[in-house]
Image (cartoon, rainbow over all chains, first blue to last red; front, side, top):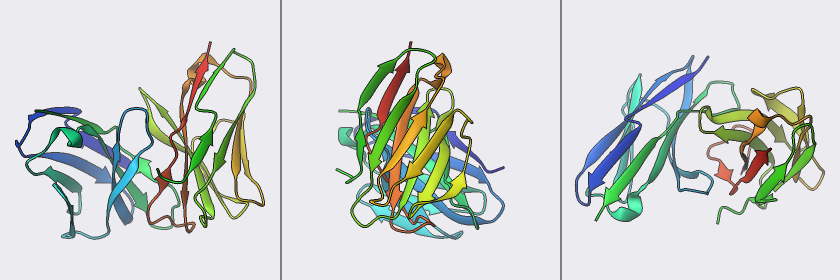
Length: 110
Length: 113
């Protein structure tokens, strides 16, 4: 069974203080690893898809990287509007569903 | 706005009752997914439909059922409700059956009292 573990559970940052979120996964043949952002009371919003080890993707202050066992979401010089829960999910080969981790809740203080 | 519409936003009901959650996917999307989110379980995949046919099943209880209609909207039926069914239910849609990325609705908050 696919397993996704995210750490830390919660992260409190000062505005401008860069940090990284970790997503460790176990899957029998990775088709894709996904990062989503979820704001309170809303549905998850797609950020990135990574397909193979070594791949990197960037969007504004966010950068996602992938190895064979884990993915990192780097937040560079965060702003208060980056406060959200960040969810990692994996999809196995020949599988339709996404298996989500529990998420990391990031709070950025001004 | 993701383009995925879920109704109702909130639902309060009693144990033993039956409810129906409705989802309209983004225009052009053929796949609809249902997920359940609770504090202790996180986001759990329930079921997927593609162009009217069931494509994949996850941890969906036998008391729950779903369908996708010819106009591609979907309904999730929850029956014989228990306190533990209280959760946020999300619908998501994608263009294909092997989703490259999902677009989630805002969810239906179900409270079973």
